[in-house]
Amino acid sequence: MTSSILCHLLVGLPGSGKSTFARQLNEQIPNSVIISTDAIRLRLYGDEKIQGDWNTIEQSVIEQVRLAITHEQTAIYDATNVRLDWRNSLLDKVSDLNPEWIAWWINTPVNICKYWNRRRSRKVPNYVINAYYDDLQQSPPTLGEGYIAVKEITPLG
Picture (spheres, rainbow, N blue to C red):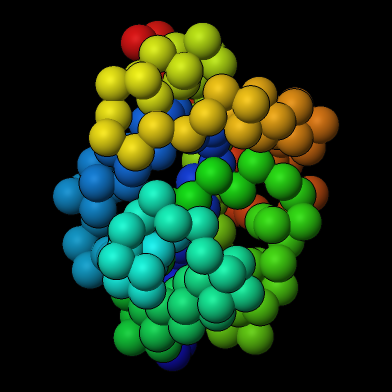
């Protein structure tokens, strides 16, 4: 590998539109792959609603990101990533491959996330959305985490 692979990490509440944005990025970026915790849960447990064992899920995320980077593919990581320690864990575990990361903060207002959440098949309880909102307010993504850019997108609903 002669140059760094540019990867994308999505950050946002459940129901914020991350997966829709991931698909749009995937359509725009040749040779890109979406790595989704929902898809991993579906593969591992037969249902994306089953939260399962995070260590097993995270291991699969890391393996898929590493595989994408070593095959010179752009990884698009589609997960909530609302906590700083969650984001740092991923970046640390693939840092030896020297990818560059852009963080995309899908900053949809919480009331719109709850509205959109009620209309999708996999509903997340409001208390989880509220807790994740608090987490994200305490530690929004910043350049100091090691990204080459942090892009904030605010869908209006």
